Length: 57
Image 1 (cartoon, one colour):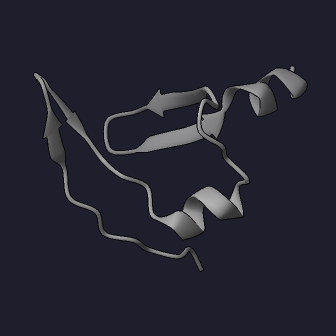
Image 2 (cartoon, one colour; image 1 turned 30 degrees about the vertical axis):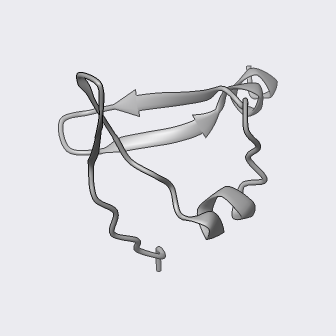
């Protein structure tokens, strides 16, 4: 069963942003400066660290 977090959209300039909760960041061992790849479909967005994607190629 997935863990569910609710976050609110914030505004930065002309863009919208979300802040990922600390448990997500720590769980994936993401660090400031990591490049994240977003996969977008009609109803969902999947985030993956770019260097993890490169190792799966």
